[in-house]
Image 1 (cartoon, chains in turn brown, orange):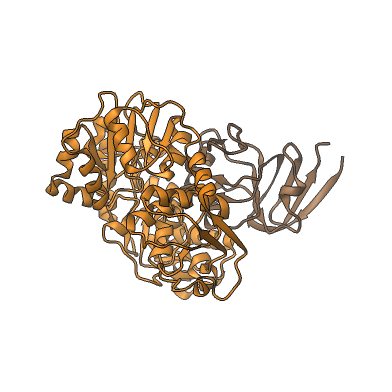
Image 2 (cartoon, helix red, strand yellow; image 1 turned 90 degrees about the vertical axis):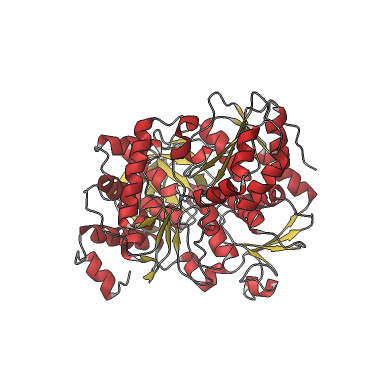
Length: 138
Length: 428
């Protein structure tokens, strides 16, 4: 099993490890997820019907309603939040959303996480040290 | 992040526990963004209410205490702090229910009581109850250059693009912190350089109706995501309603928070000014094929032509749009199996009442509602399976949230569907 290490910037501190859920589609918060289960509900989203609950969510960034943060806030209170969030495009929606989700979050990587990480890979996130360790599934 | 003396004092708790929590959240948020400092704001648009289903349940579990709701949902503080009067001028955006039409919307009386308690609470702490996604339609019209902290993506893009005021898309927690402190991170669209255009959009078809503008916005949002589009080739100056529908759509299919129309919007007297002398990252064409693509995408959930429900007023209708609907409805009756709800800010409804518009809609069998919308409040007539909408934004969200099919078309096509019970619209 090959290991890959990415370096990036801490958005929210902490560490976590788990299975990756990767999408190349941006994620909509309000009207894009069901926060009670962490399921993507956006009509034409490639992850429609899948839940990020308990996963390391790897995605380009946030789009849509300014209710983004409050939906992830509710997901945390409902126990359906992702374990960690890794993303490329910084916006106020994703920054605030990550802060209120209280899960480790990182951005500004030395390699594109969307290219390096695949769904099902095992990912260790140490946001305080700015390190992500990826163990490929195959 | 660098803090000024007054900000440091708030963070140290010298202005009470609530402002300490608010400043702590702003610091965590600012550092997540990579912001260097905060900026003063005296114009906040936010949601504080406890009327969306999850927050309603949370409030009920906590005995309906609004301080507990505000602490958790508006300040990200599990510790309940007493909320003082706000520092910044603050307006409430849309709510979860219309208290005057609770029965039609299927809202239980105890929820209306909770709503009324929440309203009284917000009034006491100084939140102005505009209760609309379109604060700029009812008196909150920031001036060019004014630093704001607004929620509601369709209002944010209007504030930046049309008015030339400055805001990022804030969330419930950052807007909650901003109203108590009068501060927001100085980042993103507060800075000149980030307001310049990135993508040139060459519009090669006529864009006239609000539906046309919605389609254009829907296509652009998907094409540029969260970048800054600059429109060239707009021959007819659009009015408030058209720019409102355009922005709402672009902020739904993508994350657009700022745009320019050369020769129309305040920071784009010319293409050169819009791009600040830089070259566009990409040039995209919007012609007949792109228009059709947007139309097919926004109508992707529609299959059955029998329409149960027509919803207008996303974003909340202007008085002019209500008048347009009234002229199409006057003297007619809705189809027996079709409902019509039109949403507007309560301040505009008051004038619609005086003008006799509310009566015209009522006599036709429709209802003029305020404060919420179908998607935000999850409210529709019982048994609705197929809806007709003149808003690309609502057509984007309602099928995802409520599992319905949605037809998108012009206002006239929607009214026709309400009168005949069938969708006969199409791209023309």
